[in-house]
Amino acid sequence: MEPLVFKESAALSFGIELELQILNPRDYDLTRGAADLLRLVEKKPHPGDIKPEITESMIEVSTSVLTRHAEALKELRGIRDAVIAAAQRLNLRIAGGGAHPFQKWSEQRIFPKPRFNHLSELYGYLAKQFTVFGQHVHIGVRSGDEAVYLTHMMSRYIPHFIALSASSPFYQGVDTAFDSSRLNTVNAFPLSGTMPFVESWEAFNEYFERMRGFGIVESMKDFYWDIRPKPEYGTIEIRVCDTPLTVEKAADLAAYAQSLAAWLLKDRPRQPSRDVYRVYSYNRFLACRFGLDATLVDAYTQSQVSLRDDILDTLQTIMPHAIALECQSALHSIRESAAGGGNDSAWLRDALQRSGTLNDVARLQAALWMGTGE
Image (cartoon, rainbow, N blue to C red; front, side, top):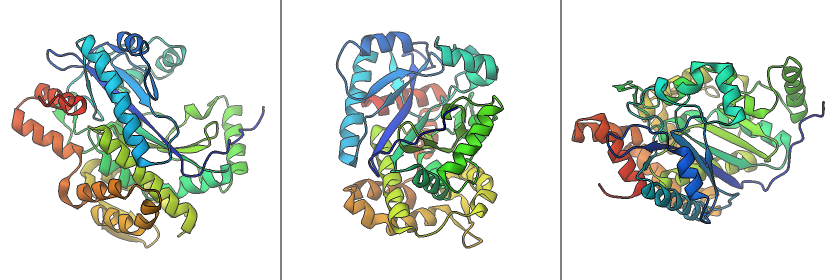
């Protein structure tokens, strides 16, 4: 078979994908509205792309290829407005958040597409449990070797993105005690985790061909890694973020990823280390469990540091790159969250304290996303 060809793309260009919840307006449970919503939204021009996801109570929206934070904000708001207009005509509600607070996975229905049906047949009940909602950020790179380098180097900072984006404290009707419960669902899949520690695109191709030869994978889509190269796009794809409660936060997270990538690629502050992967699962767990209050094991210094402080230090380090990319305002917002403003999981727990029921939490999530001010 032909090896994977890595398509060159504009360095530090980026794109954003968001998985969104479709709710009914009665008790704010998930509802099977994707097909009707997609049919309606396709009738009018809109930016980006809007398509189905694995179950009928969710959709995925994605931007075009972008270079600036301001572009991302404008396009995400345009996509949001198009989805909201269609949802309101159908008497549906749309919400962000990494997991619906009280839906039951057994009641979900697989969206009728060949790939989703295949996944359902392969993974059984796990496919319906995959009714969780994430943000993916693509960062453009110039070569496969650059993609391998950046994937390894970004792995050190994955806890940052988990803690900053965490918005899934509630799952199946209970407070999980995690800031991000969503990633526990992803862990159940056999091809989750991290890319192997290869040193070049040629070496990665050798690994991929071996896996394809075993009949385990057919394409990069079969790997559910936290970060993966996407050779057909010329990007790396960061996949650990919960879907934020607003498009503004989604744009800020993408700008953080872009600025961090600029620093790693241009300054080359370190070289990839196997030790990052030795502590990776532990760091990932702590970030999911405790969010911004987690501890981070720094594989390079062999020390434990406050994740919150590590984010603040990193923001200061990469700020010159953010200024060059015209996204310093996004990093200031990230700083406010890290310094004490809290992540979306804190907002959701506060919403439960204020409202008293998870139904009201879901209602408030939808109001925040849709800007209805309920």
